[in-house]
Image 1: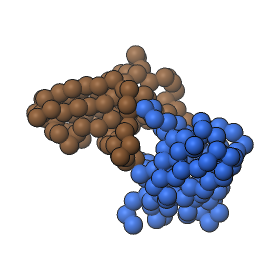
Image 2: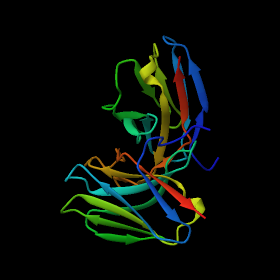
Image 3: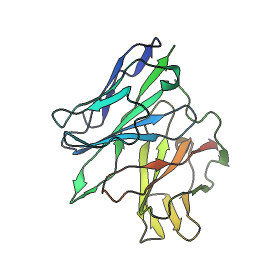
Image 4: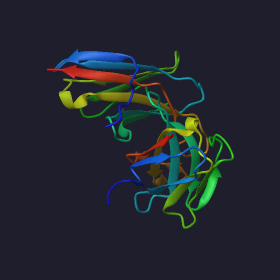
Length: 116
Length: 114
């Protein structure tokens, strides 16, 4: 596809359950990002990959959050033992690079996670 | 579908009028700024960007102004249309790592009335 694709579109999890959210970036994009967007707020940075390397995970809120991009393309954000405060929209974005700098970031539609 | 920006400040304009959305950013070291549009149930969509060595940049029907002295960014939309109705976010990139580690503002809802 032409854009960033995320699945599932919606996810309802019982508190304590583990979830896995998938992101298919734009083909050839080196950089991949995960953001968390709470209702009524702007997105907040979670983590960054350059190819398969996770270079920045400073935004991950706890050690229950884990992200991977093993082959430098598809990425998975995993949340273990989900809590109600994890309820949010999880956005994935990807960028290409010009030299050492990213070009504009393209966002997917997001996965809305509701923890009940 | 889900709603974005349930309790955001709202700017209401008449179709055809010009809109100005303002944003204050936080980090004086930020060197790259972007405006995003987000419609309900969708991810943010890039509108226009500007680097810190510029104070104005124009696109199609949109203009971004940057005032580094007071750390202020604005988005001007000319001849606003109903399709412009959405939540608008400014974002800054304070990083020196060359990647889009963006800090988003709180957002403004733009409501365009026919």
